[in-house]
Image (cartoon, rainbow over all chains, first blue to last red; front, side, top):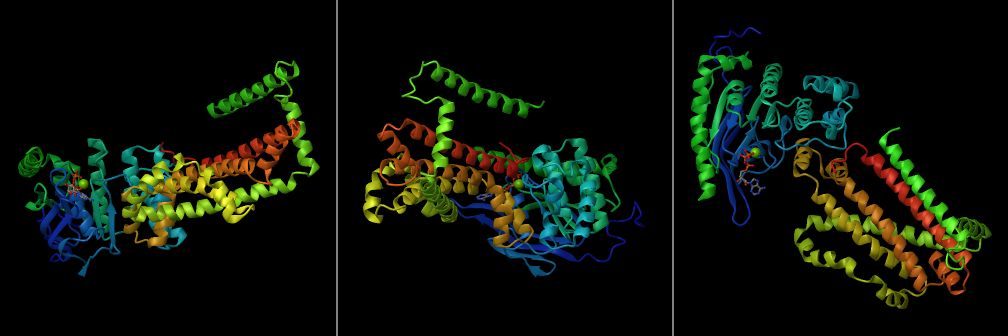
Length: 277
Length: 253
Ligand SMILES: Nc1ncnc2c1ncn2[C@@H]1O[C@H](COP(=O)(O)OP(=O)(O)OP(=O)(O)O)[C@@H](O)[C@H]1O
Ligand SMILES: [Mg+2]
């Protein structure tokens, strides 16, 4: 690792290439009345970028993730991944960790983690190697043969993270993956996520309700408005690539979270006030 | 000794105790032997009636009727449940019928069925099917309703096709309900077919029990009743063990 701690962000990287992009994307859930959940949104994710999304509850963050992953089609606008349009199908190379518990209760922890690899027809020895590594990485080694019902909510979420990571996705979408964890574990998991991001050079989009998490982990934070969600601010954090949770002590950190909080506060008041009106 | 063992032992002791008490009441004449046979006499009668071979064709008849009705109701129940689940409009239209289905006394249709099919196994298969299929259908609907949408998203993320999604995600996620449906279907098929034989049939275990009853042949009647009871208990236990094995460590209540 030859990145200097004080170097400009991206200074030692080639010009960023766009990895995934949203152009004029909206999502309206049909029904009576229809729910306009998202957009219009324009967003370019640079290859290898760590992008965090914050926004008030119900503003359309999970909807954004669904549309970007190809799990639901945009009502309007274009989504592309690696230059190809994404339409209603999840492209190869995209991995998602969902907000809800998505572990399979009928499979053991290691079988859960191996699920995608087995379907993809990966060689068994390679499956074992990758699963062992991911299970260890997520701190689940003692529970490899346990079943999800024997685990806590946070541990189940880690199973789901491992299941997605073993597929070695080039774009990783995480929807509040640490929501069920306590503050200290959350920060440490954040460090692990950063380590993984550096090792794999994947592009990461992280949805979180924790401002400090967004500010500490990402290269860029997008603050969303109340529903229908749009980006009201995009903030470059300027952190070096080689960073960890000790950043919270940096001088710039407080100013950054304060700026994010001012947006989130205003939009959350709108979201709640809108519900009361 | 662990908790499960203790429960099992207590259950066993309860049954043995009840049988012993019954035996005692019968032997001491508190219960008239014309009303109820002593358990030991019942068992002896059962062995004798079965061994004599005089009801072998009835046993085969009843079990094959139940087997056909059960198999058909599981297959059709699952298929119909999946269909209703896939077409919400159809399901809404069918909902009142399903909700009040078991309030309907199927047996009133039995004479019609006999007139229609003749006095063979078909009317009974139809009755067994009618009683069992809807239980399987409703359980299938319940199971499919309970498949968490996020699991289907996981399947799509792994780019599974329809068939692999069905067998690798939907069926395992719905398995507890499907299992319940299977158990109910077997019990309903059995009850309705034996009862049908009892009322209006010339063959089968139900008919033989009714025949023994009408000719005051207590030994045969109780022997056959015990036999039916034993068979149903054994089959249910087997299904239960199978279910426990399949769902062993995933019960989320
Ligand atoms: N399947 C759906 N059908 C109809 N409306 C939906 C559906 N899913 C979400 N919505 C609505 O769309 C809006 C955005 O939902 P979404 O789940 O994207 O919000 P979110 O930002 O992820 O919220 P949270 O922070 O609570 O997870 C909400 O108002 C929600 O009620
Ligand atoms: Mg959400």
